Image 1 (cartoon, one colour):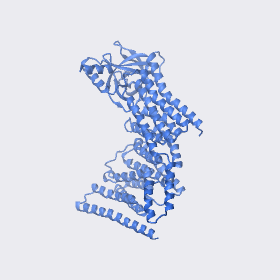
Image 2: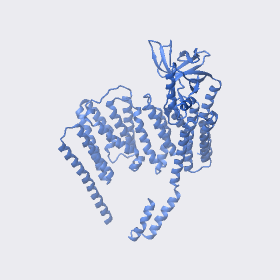
Image 3: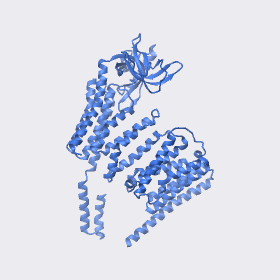
Image 4: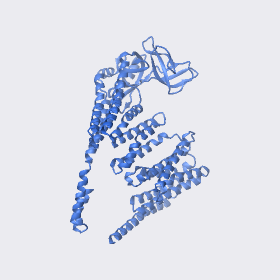
Length: 429
Length: 190
């Protein structure tokens, strides 16, 4: 970015936008900034190297070298673990750079995994993959805090998600409560990153990984009737969206705020799926009575209300944003529909249309083409989906699609014009 | 936090990390050194574990027992007391939902079904995984099938050492030949 900017400096001098002195000062500023920052590529290669070597060792061990005597295999199992421990100990004791800490931490993470795996293999230790992963994750969690390592948090999250999927989706249908313990285990670290390192790349990555992991594992906690399945998912995505709107995260760009992106997309997709006539007519319903039918929605609503109240206290509820209240609106639709199914069907269509229109408006207000087109896409999706429900003639469908297409072009064109005229105005002033 | 405290905390963590595999080694080696060996008749099939490698899952002939107890729960511990039958294979002497006061060897299995009418309790023995060199697990399953077609009775068994309720699976045999060697012999004869 800075190189690109420096390259444009001669042009700015020629056109007398800035003086030569200013150009020199800009160039020096970027040079000093680059000298201070650690070499990013070095960090990436360090971590990537450890990751590959570590997982390579596990794979080599997994081959099962049956000709080696038990004693030698046992000694071999401890070697990567001890090397990893020596490297981490050295990084801490000699106060080495964060690159050192991250790379040695990753190596030790895999060293621990390799040691338990190989000993388990040598002695045919009974126990499934879930138990093995749990031991591995628990033994490495303290490293996150000792090394202040964001890469280890990422590994922790990835493996915790893997564990949860195995228990919740592929196991005996048990609810993987330990996932929540694992999640809480890294929350203090995450909170610290939010407070102190909001500009780092690791922070953006964590802002995507946390909601992604939650979205993947959420289904594993559900043991609910199909009739409230959409409700709990809308409540869940609504909660993610509201987390993304909390003061610390709201100021971030969309590409750094996974909560907002996943929450918004999740709400829209779930609403669109729930807007089918078949669902509201009751064909799809399978009633199943369990305690989670009650406590899951209540917990999600409580958490969402807490985030809203907190935002209100911190004065970050404005400007009004319909997405933040979708959970409450859908709840009303849900209650109404249990008495009048058709009314529910109509209301949910209006809700999606409302979301589309407010998104378009936000896009126009912010001169943001991405948001504008996202809003238009919501409306398009709604109209297209209704074709599956109704017996409209091909002519009407065709005309509707052409109208949407024209709408897309004109909305973007009008906004482009508006933006240009605004730019011209500010230049003339 | 001061570096020295951080370092001390890390040393404690490192010792915990080392203690887990080390305890596994000592516990298992002690059973192999001084436990009693039993042969459990079995049938192998081959799945994969992404971290620990290829293994064969063992499905044992000894998987149920007649019981006088009636209050069994699924997926709970069951103490299976062992004896050796006339052919030298392991057999159930008695089962109990809790540890009883006898000197008999026992293994702790998991219950998975109770039939009140016949008073039979089904259980799964704990040592159901035998890790093998990656190219041998599937041929091992095939070799077992071939051997069981040829023989009149199940001649595949797992050699398990048992000590104080803890069991370690040392090897699996087909016709008294270790399964790894058996697979190789099959390859050369084929």
